[in-house]
Image (cartoon, rainbow, N blue to C red; front, side, top):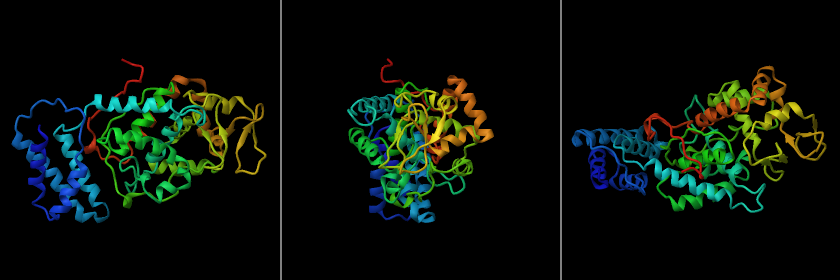
Length: 370
């Protein structure tokens, strides 16, 4: 389908609504992305039927503008995204693979930053931009990438993520057609896979939101808390005890910074490699409270170079959490399987089904795969 025909059909369908022409024109111009590679979709049996379907989707989004005045722009964007999916008017998997490959090149440009890789902080960006989801209010999640806006960008849990957002902004400029939500979550997938972790199913379809959709503070885990807090925060997102423990295994990589979270140090001896060492160390090392002027955290008694948060240590204190943590400590393959599944679920939180480009997620190739 040509871009001009798609645009004409959308214009015809939506102008029957009450949106001012100038406002509608600007929203559609901002919502319809330019793609680097045209999709090779089979010609529909009836263009008339296809255009009517597209128009109906976008017209519904236009009507929703008045029902949800705080998110009217998003309603139109979501409707246009759904229309593009119906028309197969989307970039190809190969286009997203190019973005993936570009992200992986950035990982290695870290120089002296942390442990020589940007991958852990990009994974943290994907995690924190998705983990704001509230299953009751259907707000938050990866769909709108609202960490771009204050006050969410300044929340304590997001301290230091300006580094990751700036890095990804450079890539966004190279691939302006990709939404921030898709870019950030694809970056998270790349980080896991390129740090020798499992393949994480992923698919595009997120849209960029507006400042009004920025989430309130307090939706992300507080590392100083205990088991009840973990169940409350992760339960709000829709995760069970096993999934909570599996997600916690992401602490195999990265480190804390005293000038950001207040905590300090890495969790494992290989903070740029995804392993089950986080769980093994929880059981194998003797952990003692660190004597310092910072917040309460634990350190390994042997080398005093590793750390655990109170929310980490509770995984071997709570009876149910401990059962899953022990299973992952004993079986890395099991951890990889469950970690991949729960990360895929996390990265899709808050995205309406109609927006997905494909009904089944993709498996992206590692940068060194042909």
